[in-house]
Image (tube, rainbow, N blue to C red; front, side, top):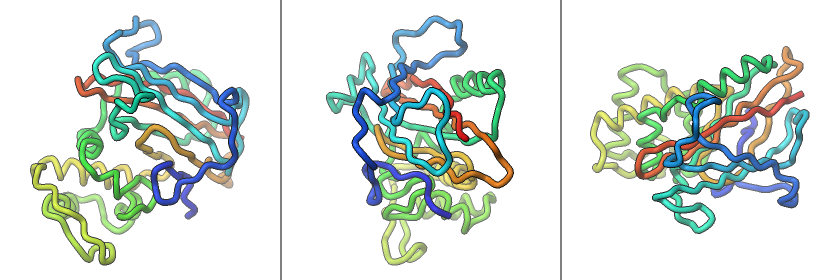
Length: 250
């Protein structure tokens, strides 16, 4: 299966074309519990830009470039290099054509969901330096791991042991370093998230401030679809700023 996502910063990143900044779709995104709630000024401010800009439809099997800017009262501003990029995340989910009201509900639900414990630990570790969700970097992707191993309690314990103590020979000759700063409980949470996220076929997680993803090829039984994009940042004070928007695909 062709990998639809290529992140800037990975060994296989690329940008096609040089779309001017004025073409980017800029959205100021802040975490809310509901659309009527007053913004909490202590939350990080997140800005998502998407290019090319289309207010109507995006097309199957085409590239979308994105960049995320973050500012936080305590942590600082991404434009000055003050933000930990591993805490910046773009989550994407593909859905067959959905009516607008249901789409609004999806946005509200995503606003109040905290990070999975395993994901939080992965972001604070060095794991994303070698592993990605659907892209193969120095180590196997989450999807490749989920293809090889069943999501069972035994598998989670086995993967947890490798994360904690390191391993070699499981995926070629490259050695995975040990992570003695973590506990067995924490590595089990990480392994559980890797298997769960890796098994999702129409959901992608991209850490970092910018990159390019490719919209999937048109499924045979679908005429139109929606890409739900959620940009987020979790601050050192554990405050999460995020919001979601839709791309209509046909």
